[in-house]
Image (cartoon, rainbow, N blue to C red):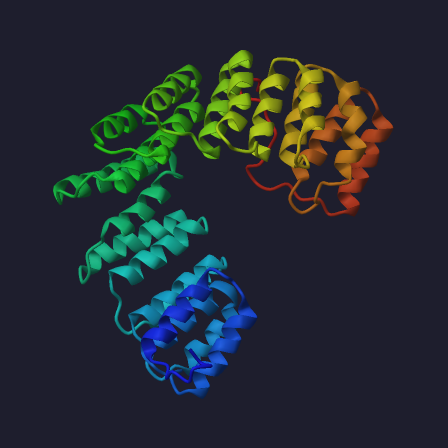
Length: 393
């Protein structure tokens, strides 16, 4: 188009920028930015918004510079910055932008709530939703409630109560129980342990996709209903729904919870039959399943046969199984290798587990060596993170 000397307009520029979004090439965006500035379209609001979106995906520094230079900003400009900061994990700066907005719409509130939820600030997300309702200037939509329900899903019994209120809001406003809304509701109830309500919502849905089935399967597995999860999985297969990687994580977790070794092997082999590649979490579930059953040699063979490099979670599961079944020598055979991959700032639980294994085997010198290693490396144990076998404490 440039070679033919055809003049550019805002539409051709917008389509060019949109096509560049998926390339994730910062140098290319900067080149286009310079060209857009040269031909005088840089301060066209829609062009500027599209350029800002590209920068917000790739470089917050560039996005902030452009945002500060924009003589005119609309709600899209502000919302893009909120989403950009949230995506890069800076919810506080996103909130600062949100607070500075001259006029907030439903998308603005939804973006900020989603930013809090995606970064693990569930209580702040729910508080902001409460402020939105009390404010009354804009009303939540299904996107807003999707984020709110996701927050509720992480808050146990309190979350289920709040989630029921949101569910009541959906029913009161006679919103359609479409696939997206229904799936988020099923996921919320399932993660909160209210499986009866999860099943009721699931049965009321006219359309379901693989995520709807997976939410129910993972919920059942998470709360110890392993065999029920298998029944749901088989129903899904009968309905012609193809499982995805997350579905298999749920079903293998269910097998590990219920000690179903034969079924676990079957479903693990089914992953490749469905055209998928086993992920690290699938191997981890198999190690957990075999370790709990005392089949440590088989668990170790699974680790050695992995196409992926085993991570700390996989090794932690194996070490915990060795500890539970008092197979200390098997653990000692891999300890030094594990100590070479653990990170002091995040893997304090592994160091403690290794110390326990040495102490239980009366290898006091080795236990003391690891303790000194922990002190020298300033090892920290993340609050709430342990390798503890369910039902053994």
